Length: 88
Image 1 (spheres, helix red, strand yellow):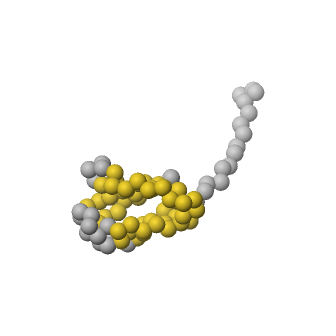
Image 2: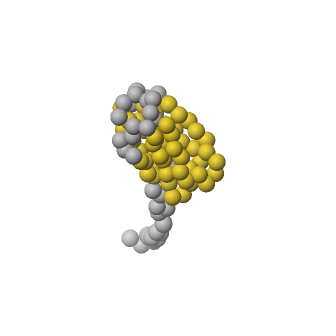
Image 3: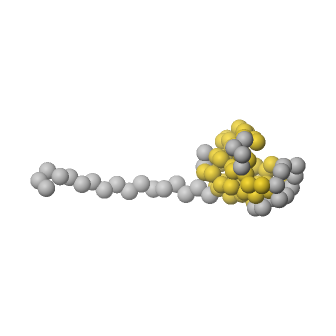
């Protein structure tokens, strides 16, 4: 229609990899990202926050001891994304 202006903009997506290993875990879980972590939270399947950690700027890898955790599904939430993992 007369006066309609369409402007196309492309935005570059920042590709962030959030990795958890091993999954399932039995002794340790490692969380890593290619763009640094500033903090993370881990929640159990009942919705209880198990860990809330602030990390030094630029931290790309963090390991937590899960050897005494109950078996089940947990969720890691960071500013870079959210993923679940299993403790056996």
